[in-house]
Length: 385
Image (cartoon, rainbow, N blue to C red; front, side, top):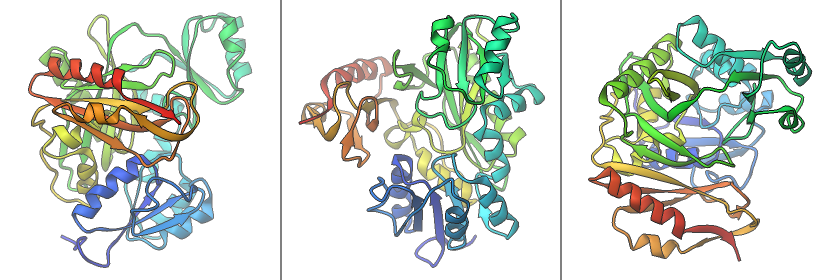
């Protein structure tokens, strides 16, 4: 095995946000040299990586020149310049996840087409180059209300997704490439994280259940294990594994799913990196998702994905009506509770619904953990002075 530890090896990371920051915790454990590229000089990773480079992730030259300085390149955000990655890969740089997979995943339309081609169950959809095409389809009864509108590119944290129930809802949609997806009644939103290394070794994490904020369309709670039938959990893990194998994916892939009213599982979308739905694993799993990401891209044997205890993750987001220097009100109160661990992402300024951190709650009993999670959610506030 190549010597990655306490050596001249350099791991490059595209993106310097909170996912990168948590990944750096694992590189520091293993003494892996890290270089990070991000356009924000105050990004969460800036102070704690070995080398920090300021540059636009969508700029060809910035990404290409950065890639020439490292031995392996990975991402913590998928919206990066793929032409630069293609060129770097053609010149021999090891890049995981592969640029070809990022090209599919960057576009929600390409993702959906991939699912159809590979007989992966997903909600029916239509693809439009711009908003007028979608409106034309509505006027000609090709599609009908209600439906889920999704921007084909650059959506994140609930941005770029809207349930459209009537003509009024169309008014606020931007004129961009998009998909219109059939609104599926579902009982649960689930997720499965899968790791795969270049030897083809794969590991799936337990199925988690996600509870969303009704307005911001952001995950409020991630619950592991999901409170679903064991047979359904097995199907979800098998389906996530199929997605990874059909992509021939290397790295960590989060597969988000719907469990419909009639107990069918549909793939919603995927994220080719550590994911919000796996943050619980830092406290609750034998091998957390960030260490597993490193193991998969460096082709190190994958660690156990089993949980040592039930875990729930609560997102800390900026409260409505507050913008400016952040204060975590009542954080000392939640620190008094057994099994509660806050993670603060290093963002100095808050704004409404901005992800500022998360809190993990662990307990032997998932129902007890859920009660504590509710208390945590109601106690801590992300505000300004």
